[in-house]
Structures are given as C-alpha cells and as structure tokens.
Length: 138
Image 1 (cartoon, rainbow, N blue to C red):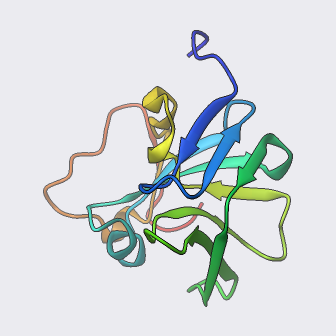
Image 2: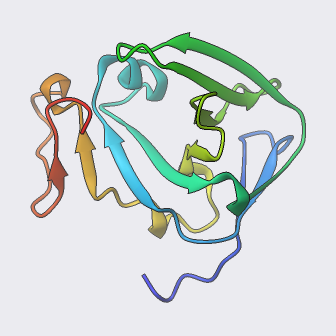
C-alpha cells in the first residue's frame, strides 16, 4: 500500500484521545480467540504491531490489565470517557505496541496478513486465501 501517506491520525469515538501513526505497522493480525471476540464484540479483533517510537498519543488514557493464557500480562490503554480501546502492550515489551487500528483515518492499513487463534474462530467466518493462519499463537 505504497499510496498511504504517513502520519495517519486516529481517535477514540468521543475524540478525547487522539494519536498519530508515523510509519506503517510491522504486521496486522486478526485474533479469533474468545477474549478478543469479547473485546471487539465481533468475530475477531484487529491488532497492528507498531514500535512505540512510531506513535504519538494525546489525551487522557486509562489502563487495565489481565494475565493471558500464555502467562504474559496483557495491558490495555483506553479512553476513560467513551471506553474505546486504543492499544494493548505487554509490560515486559513496552517498545512494541499492539494498536487497535480500526479508528485510524485511513483504514486501508488494517487488512490482516495473519490470523491467530483460529482454533476458536466463529464457524461462519471464512479465512482469506494467502493469509498466514495459526491455530493458537505463532
């Protein structure tokens, strides 16, 4: 997608939290695990892997965390006003942000190239041809 111009802007639903994505994501992943289905209230959740140095945030972020099946801590940053998730991060790898990219101004960037936790995917969802597919985490 060479015709996408960076930086891209993003914002929560109410606009209290905004951000700039300065460069293309390293990867865009669709996670089909049950926790991501709850998070997204959909069949899967999209995540863009982005170096923290490629993001600039503005506005008050709230934080929440849980221990994932892997034993890692999955921390989330979200808008305290509207509740939109902005990103996830493993506190032991703060240099890698797991951005929730559906709120970007140019959503062409959010096409996933990997599908993970397909062992828990909704039966009606057909996986796209050419994508990397993993039963759980790669």
